[in-house]
Amino acid sequence: MIISVASGKGGTGKTTIAVNLAAALDERAELLDCDVEEPNAHLFLHPVIERSRQITTPVPRVDRDQCTLCRKCAEICRFSAIAVAGKQVLVFADLCHGCGGCTLVCPEQAITEVGRELGVIDFGRRDGLGYVGGRLRVGEAMAPPLIKQVRAAADPQRITIVDAPPGTSCPVIAAMHGADFVLLVTEPTPFGLHDLRLAVAAVKLLGIPAGLAVNRADLGDDRVFRYAEEEGLPLLMTIPFDRRIAETYSRGELLVNALPERREQFVELYRRIETIVHRSKAATCAN
Amino acid sequence: MRELVIISGKGGTGKTSLTAAFAALAARSGRLALCDADVDAADLHLLAQPTVRQTADFMGGCKARIDPELCTGCGICRANCRFDAISERFAVEPIRCEGCGVCVDFCPAQAIAFPQQRCGQWFVSDTRFGPMIHARLGIAEENSGKLVSLIRREARQLAEARGIDLLLTDGPPGIGCPVIAALGGATALAIIVEPTVSGLHDLTRVLELAAHFRVPGMVCVNKFDLNLAMTEAIEDLAGQRDVALIGRIPFDPAFVRAMVAGRTVLEFAEADQARQAVQAVWDKIIQSPSMNPLGIVDYRQTIQ
Image (cartoon, rainbow over all chains, first blue to last red; front, top):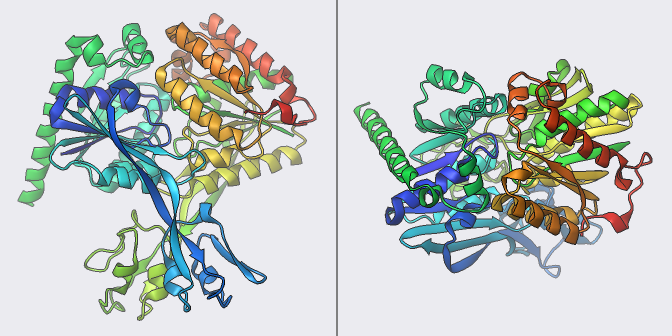
């Protein structure tokens, strides 16, 4: 079971819900921090990191002795990452998407591939709970290939909880693709509603069942709730605004520990998600 | 022309609410232009309420499309695609297609088309604060950095053409491609941080990124009273990296009530305390040496 916790708008409570849901499920779950630009889940889970792996993407290296300056590499590259200037081939590694086109097209086999560092993946645990977190190298522009690697590192035996990045473009898609369920987190404000609509469109495009969690549910208006009802988006959890919750978060503590009465709420959230996923799978099979 | 770019690292710290409030203040004493560079989840228009005057398509990269009539099923495309974008039945999954064109070039039957994609739209609008350039990136699209660069360039040109000296740019969260595209060439950065472990952590990373661009930076702690110790830790970090402190804004539900009313906190009657705090922060920004009217960058004052 893969549950991706996402939202169009930033700062709505994705990480809060993802880490507390994972902690409530404990050894049954593994948390994947796919917000690789600004990963925060470790600040709440404090996992013991057992190993780390550097992640790279392939970029070309041209052997000048074999290169005949035929320009085929520059012609195939859609990202302007390789160019012939005078008597040499220039590689702009930051622009390279690692498609391997230049290596394939080179008639002299003068191109080999080396790695450009995308970032690091940390593997660890907090008691029984598994933790896999990606950290994008500062200055690296491309988050999606690292996110895909974090996703690929998930333990399929456990419930995977994905903490997704904000937005609706390619990094978010990488964090939602192939999930069994997307839990959308929003706040009942005009910004929250506007960005929720975008996130719902992304989820529909991917054809993944989704549900809604509303954070700071009493600050704002009722338009988010009305929208959810019209969309048939099940409301699975509401968290009221409570200064104690905001302060607990600010210190990097888990709600399920600081406010134990909240633990059952997260276990119940999982039960509801499980029911929806099973029903939707049954419906797919019946068709 | 001076461009202040408002960023945060972490999302949801109040960038857009404050950008709109700064615009309301700046409009009282002069002319300005606005740019919403958070093209992924653009929200500034909800407060600025622009009237769109011009719309243009944003053309991004290309995507492969296999013509089943011409496809011989040889499998070369699938073998060469590093993005797993081609199914066993030789159909391209658009969401996975990176637009590299390797399949197109290597298809012996020339069965693969490679049309350029319309990835979004961008707009030139008028608002009660001044002209605004904004955009909407299509759902699940790539190239958000390219769109950010495009609308920043358009906003600068528009400001210059109309003799406007100040551009306020609402930036995206994170540190990846859209943020990199939002930082280059800015006159100064205003970084809005919340006093939480995440806010501090994300500030560290965004400052590290911003230091590459040799831009002066300023930090404002929003909702500072949620955790005073954390507010102080953030201000200490800013000091160590030569980032100016421009003040603290208290947590005030009036920000949300103003947003619900479609107004900035400056135009909202119930928000006295928040209004004064925002006014004080804006005064510090506009009077800071890095926002001098000539837009001269003092390289001793940049983020370290």
